Image 1 (tube, rainbow, N blue to C red):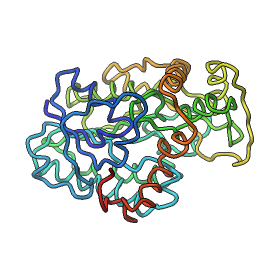
Image 2: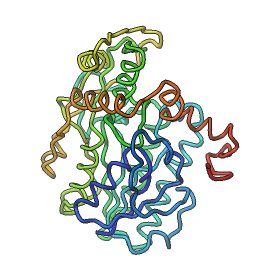
Image 3: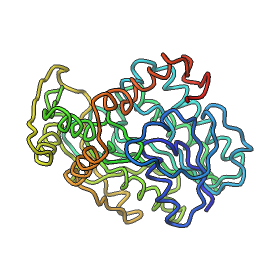
Length: 342
């Protein structure tokens, strides 16, 4: 298939593009480049790409594609809380517009990267895709809105599918250090202290970036009738862990590290355990990576590529990275480029 991959220069897109190419798909990226420079280790080899803001995509840019895989988003809860209007503008309105233009252009498949955080404060019971949605952040709320609006477009000519990814972890050449496993391993490497700022009790479902890529590859190959206009949780029940358990796993991987639960931020309302059987039954997906294996991978990469404190805090953490681009006069207040980065 000819596939347009939005966000191909992001944390997940950098892993997903080669996974799609390995299956024989012709991949074209679309990205504004906000995180293109967030590289740890060797520079990744990107597919051919369209440099465009998601809000400015045209129908002509979508013509000729068999499928759109939509990853691009402002993917950070603190950023969403700081600028909720931007989160809704980019993550919701621009995403729905993209789907509408894709349908107009004759694109038949639309794979949307949603999130398990739509379940919000779900408690200790395993939640399925039919559970009530209780988003507690603008980021999660924007995902719910996109699912609703794009589902209304589905018909015999346009087949959306909503892949609700668990919280990602694992190494990508374009690193994110502000997601829980990646963050805790970085703290362990740089300070020896695995710091948990909450009370450690919230549940988190987790899934490796490469497993997410494989899930999208499998959804793209699945018969349309199995996935048409359906939502699927992507992850593994074995990777439903409390934040304290994640921290303990990291301590078991990083030599000379120790766990510190400060509790300074109090209980986190985002707590949910997730059932992943529907996607397993539909396409045969099973996550291959455990949290321990991913933490070991991250530890080895951080050491091998020389992760330093400044890059951890600025380059690989979304909010400070974007704030730096703005303070350097590269971005305006709407997160649009004023001038390209050097």
